[in-house]
Length: 327
Image (cartoon, rainbow, N blue to C red; front, side):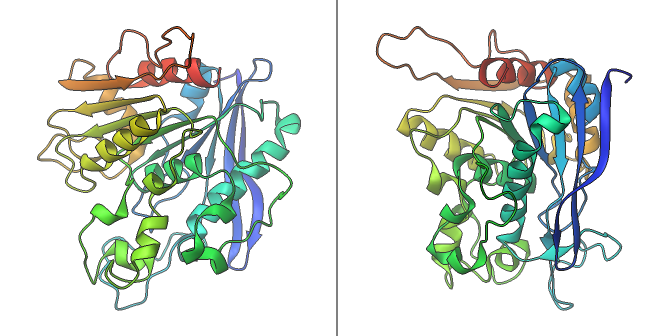
């Protein structure tokens, strides 16, 4: 699109194993807000190109969109995740919480370079899908990367533009994990690999890596979308986050899409890429869904819902949410 300026492959930090990059899409409007997209792929695969039509939605939503790379999970040769591990993926690798550290570094870098690229550093939302949904939630409810928790105290370092804030003003999560303590206590698989072992061996890491553990009354408003038939990340994950947000008095909207699996596939199908996810939602806007919205008011305030008239899950619902939170 002619009215979107695209900056591909901006390096925001150089890690030991290589450059961490982001792609930035900026509309021509004056000082638009910023949406930071965090891709899915089970914390171990895919790249920052796994983002739904960023030029289109930067234009339609009048928001700058940045798709940020983060270090992917390393896996030993005998790990039971071979089907997820793509050795040709050039993204540098590490171990959690490197993923979170990089997302926060990207947010601080983007805030520090806002004047250079032409967007508003004070109005920032995170948006992520699947593993990226988990990281979007975690980055949203934790302002400073060093507040992740004692279980990770020796593994987080704030080196990239440390003078800038990593806080955000809104969160969008598509089928993201919010509470690792609800997951199976397995010895193998991506989650014990990610968190350093089964839950029984390192319970504090499971708690502190869970976004629900960091929700406070100051957490930003959140939009959740999840398929009820999700076989990869249970819809209970979004329900749990929604309940905790409601308990502390933070406004939240939760869409549950009936009969849809992960990445908005039909229940009996599986689609791997978020690149087509928004198209799937938009192609069937009347798909059966339930919407739960809780708007919390201060004394003397009038109701101001996050999404007016509750349109179907998809670009218009996100557009309205961004309009109420960062635009």
